[in-house]
Image (cartoon, rainbow, N blue to C red):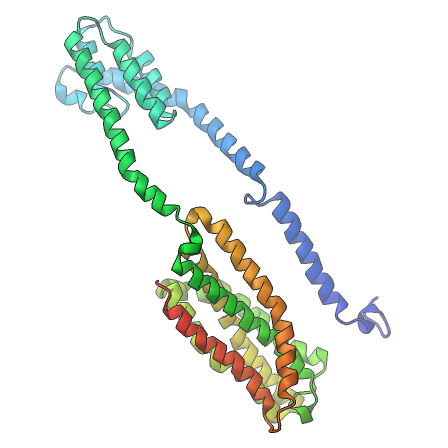
Length: 378
């Protein structure tokens, strides 16, 4: 009903695509608010609570099974059988119970030890030492002292190991802005976003400009043909072609090769002006160019974001990604301004072929990014 003559979509042809984009943005916003773990900590807390309940449900069963295994093992008298006890079994206890038949039942002892596994490491260590000391008989004076010394030695070793590991933990928490790799990958991502944004702004100006000014004089419905055709190609490339390429080569190698291929592909666009006035030939060149440009742009954007996320510390990826998105938003605002300024300035040049100059500048940006990503370590 809205597509007929003198109807809404006929009078406002850009209203429908803008409405579709706005609807997708609203869906993404509500998904981020109510579904994503990163923006809704309640989901994380519920999952952790569910996991802890599941672990508690299985503890008694596990404890009974281990108790049965331990009781069967203690019924043997050979030391070799005692070595095959489960990990939660303490050798001192089994030896003491064989020497003193009146000691505590194996089930109670094992249930106490099994409950300690789920406690924090420091609490479990001290609690196990306390349990061992209580279960030891007064007649085992020498052995009780030996167990106390062993527990103290283990505690000292734990503290010494923590002291050794503390410098490593501190070095992992160095600020992300002091990392050279983070700076390089963020700068590269900003240049990628700026280059493709500039290209997207130049295309409609070039396609709608008069032929005598180096343009193609294409109406909006014809310009939509190459953009529409490149969409399915980009989806197929993203799902089935790009992942094997990244697995066969490295992400950095895929990034650099994609930038190298992007430069000549961009220069295919202004060659359509050679057949300006012939709609079928013009659309054929633009469609071929954009069916190649879009998959390469997908590879470049994907690899640049992967490099950003692998360059920064895992505990500080939120800040790194936030700065990356801020840079991308800034260059996307800068792209339309510089794109219009570049095209308008090229019209004032006293020689023909100014349309090649604009796209040549974009190709030079892709080549210059080769130098930047040559400094990034794989």
